[in-house]
Image 1: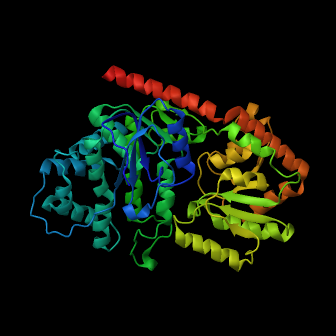
Image 2: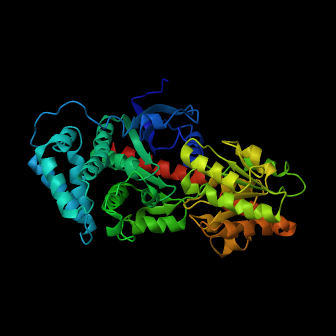
Image 3: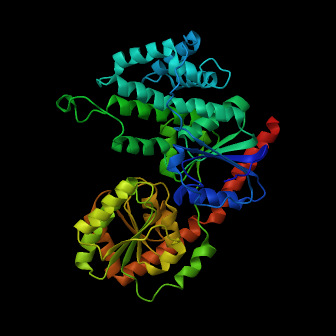
Amino acid sequence: MSHPTAGQADIALLLEGTFPYVSGGVSSWVNQIIRAYPEYRFALIFLGSRREDYSRFRYELPANVVHFEEHFLYDDLPKHDKPRSRTGNEQAFKAAACLHDKFTPGTPHAEAMQAFKEVAHAMMPGGKLTLDDFLHSERSWEIVCDRYRNFCTDPSFVDYFWTVRIMHTPLWKLAKIADSLLDVRVLHTISTGYAGFLGALIHQTRGTPLILSEHGIYTKERKIDLFKSEWIRDNRNVFQRDPTELSYFRQMWIHFFEWLGRFCYDAADPIIALYEQNRRRQIDDGAQPERTTSIPNGISLPRFTPLRAARPENVPPVLCLIGRVVPIKDIKTFIRAMRSVVNQLPEAEGWIAGPEDEDPGYAQECRNLVHSLGLQDKVRFLGFQKVDDLLPKIGLTVLSSISEALPLVILEGYAAGVPTISTDVGSCRQLIEGLDDEDKVLGTSGAVVNIADPQAMADAAIALLRDESRWQAASRAAIARVERYYTDDLMFGRYRAVYEQALAAAGKAD
């Protein structure tokens, strides 16, 4: 497939594992943003894990995307050729070792950040800290051995050795991408992590203004992934483990992503969160308060308002979870809740509308759970669906997630007059109960329940579906809330101001 290429663009979007390969959520927002500003020329820099993990585009590139490039950070990690002997640059490795020492608690933030910047700069093409030296030099081997002896309680040196390599090697790929990137006036990264590191590195070396938008807090979501990951080995004897102790390998990964985040926070201005709670968390994680702001997501009212008239007269007894079938969405809690719902409302159905290809093993576990609970005729897996087709046919949207930011699916449901049941994650309580007194007076537009509590989820759903007056009140509150606070016109206006300010700053720098 051929992609557009250009030598210059107005805004480069740095995208890690999202648009255009993954549907929904952040990708849908990226698609909105690009199409909202046809006067700007966008370059898309996509970062993925391995090429085989991404099959096809889920979105057509908008006409104002003038450049697209993709990089897969974990492809070609193994080297089969025999490397030549090398000692490594002593000064560069000394700086790297000093950086690791400064990551320890108690080191002043500014001091540690300066060390991080120096090492990151040394990783750029032509710098003193090369990938070949990291992979194959005697000095690198000595440092790995020393740190293993001093810090690692896991008996497997082989696992430690490869963890260090897999963790750090992508940084040199990102340095190469930063060095060769086309000429852009403004950078906009949609997360911290690897994309944020790339943006900070370009800002550091070129002075290009960097905007950061965090839909979820990257370090928090990576921690969830790392706690659940089976690929991070911990080979200590099971009788020697403290069950409250986090393995050293997981600690390494968590600290790694924390410092990638801080590197990005140091470079980005503004730093944008979706809602107030996450803005405060950004500050706790190292962002300068004066650089932070909140811009909530918004949806198109003209698109969804007509769906209200398409609804049947009676409330459909259909609970619909719209989202990817992956562990972070905790689909199993929704399925278990449906067992209780059906026990009391035999006519009820549960729909799961989202792609299953991201984690096929988990998707099969969910299907197995449906069968084991005898819900084959009541819980349906619909795959990816157009939300416009679903909303007139359902009574409630349901989110059982263990982590969310500001879910568009709740807002889309609201615009169509559909209340929601959600776990108490991200901004969901704010969306359902209101943020401040002015918002709360609009009423409650559904119900909030605890994470992994299928009975509470079932009880909340039954209470709304059985009481039409209560459902109608929630529907009216949903419509009023989305119309007042969460339209795409409001969001686009705020981001237009952000882009104009950043482009003006770039012009002054030129």
